[in-house]
Length: 192
Image (cartoon, rainbow, N blue to C red):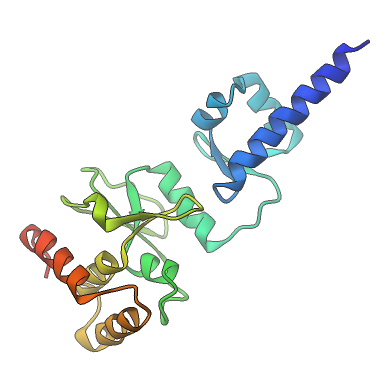
């Protein structure tokens, strides 16, 4: 008689744990994270069947009803390829730089085999130090403002790059010292 009540309470507690985890990651959870919460593969399947979760990619689930945003699309790529970091135009958009509001999806990775996703640009690099990566509260890894501008320098002509640099300095996202440090760190890896 009491077993269904206990099962319901456990189900509610489990669902609450999933929602808390998803809330920190724009509504996304990995199979590994779910298993880490103590949720069994059968329980994961049950939540897929009930519609609480939906499969986004292999080993990656989205909580149903979570809004689809640009940031979430970025996080989906990073969750599918954990060594990918939002970079270049995507990073500029995430740093709210004017002129990048319609940027596509661009990433950088140190992996020797860059993943291929339709509509996504992933460039490989031999050097991506921790100092060049910022982890946002929503779980997105993005290149620092200085590294973002460094990467944009190889993609934009100088006339288009100048206002990006000026605005980043005015907004206190970039200092000349910070830019110089990135240039010195990466000058040896063949960047322009």
